[in-house]
Each structure stands twice: as C-alpha cells, then as structure tokens.
Length: 317
Image (cartoon, rainbow, N blue to C red; front, side):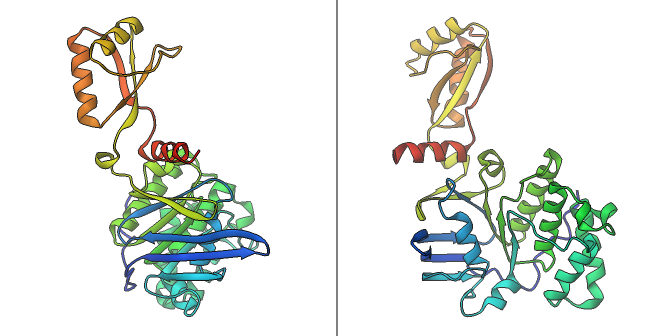
C-alpha cells in the first residue's frame, strides 16, 4: 500500500499533547481525577486502562468536546478551552462509535467534513478520492453510508479524521469491527502518520493490537495516571517467555541444571520462565540445543505492552 499521501501539512504538532492535573466530573461521579498525559510528536502513544478508568472522557477533553473542571491542556500548542477552533484545525478525532449522516454517500460525508475544515475547494475532490482509496472504500464512494458495515464505517471514520492532514490524531478503539487485513492497514497508516511527525494517541482494550502499533504507553486507573512505559523491547526489562520441547522431561532437567527458575510444564509440555531480553533468550536456546534438548519453540509469552500491564496490575493488587 502506498501511504505517500500521508504527509505533514503546514500544521505544527509543537509539543504534541500535554495535559497536567486534568479533572472532570459528572455530578458526584469523578471520571478523570488529576490525570497527566504527554503525547510527543513523531510517536504513537497508547492510552491503556480498564473500563471506567477515564480514557474516553480524557479523549473528549482533548478533542474539545468536554471542558475540564480543573487542570491544563495544550494540543499542538493550543488550549482546547480558549481556542477550540485552533485545536480542531490541528486535530483528527476518531471516536469509538462513528456517527454519520446515513442519507449522504461516503464521498459526500468526506466532502462535507473537508468544507467544515475550510480546505481549499479546488483540492477537496482529489483529497477525498485519495482517502477513499486509502481506506478501501472507493467502490462504495457513491453509496449512502447506511449500507456500510460496522468495519466499513470505522474505515470511513478514519478517512474523516485524516481529511485535513492533522498534526495530532486521537483514536478511540480504532480497530473495532475491522477485519484482520484492515487492522494491518490501519497500523501502516498510523505508523506513517507518526513517521511524518504527527502526535498520535490511541486508546484500545486490545493490548496485542497496541503492541504492534505503539512506541510508549500511558496506564490509567481510577481516573489517574499510574505509570508511563517505553515499549521498546530492548528497554522492557525481564519478561515471561515460553519454551516448548518434544521431551518435556529433558527440558525440565536441562533448565534445572542451568539454574533456571521455571514453572511446571503445561499440557503441551511448554514451560514458562523469566528472561532478561533477546540476548538471554539466545543464550538459553544455545545451551538447550547443546544439551540435546529437542526445542520446538522459544517465544515471549505475551507482548511488551501486555506484560507491562499485567506487571502493573499485579503491583497494585
């Protein structure tokens, strides 16, 4: 897929998104309580937390759709409270539930949004055609949106968020309803946006999806920021790996002889143990092969983000 049309326009992401001490309540319910967030340009930041942790509320504040009760927020250098139009001009917003005008065609939806962003009239048609090709809706361009499936509406929602080449992109559960191929293409689009200098914030419950997409993660719980982690494998620290061999008994004996602390074999003979990184994994594999253990596989038990989340929740129990 050619993502060449995804380029930074004249909008400057500045410092990306910076939020400090954000608080938002709904009557007696505190949805966001003193939350901090940084979304730097050129990187994809994952917003991770359980249901009810304040993720969507925070995104609505960043998108100028809710005003915070307290705290400070800047999006691409602009304040959502005092200069909402400037924030919207610089921001692409893709909500979890994509609402649209069902009687309009896909093309008309994007043309309407482009006009709302005051894009030059002469270039709107070409931009809309590019985006429809990008999200694989060109064949449905002149069909009313009411005929679209959930996944197709998500793709149209992404195109809508990209109409004005935003410097900041806010995505709430963007892969919801997408088929596997569309998920892969979504990752390519988002990664290219970050490479072009955009500040990207993605909220999702699918940690495996974020693992292949995000550079860093902000963990939230109870309306507060509880941790910020770099998702670079090299700096992830110790992780749980799974090793499986044709002879589970030989594997256990070899691990014991090597002084490796490990769990009991599973029903498939797989054993879990903690390794400090790829070098440690390579060293272990070499030692097992040297000891004639018939190793079938050695792999991380989960992604960097998943293991960081599990470690964090375990620490907070």
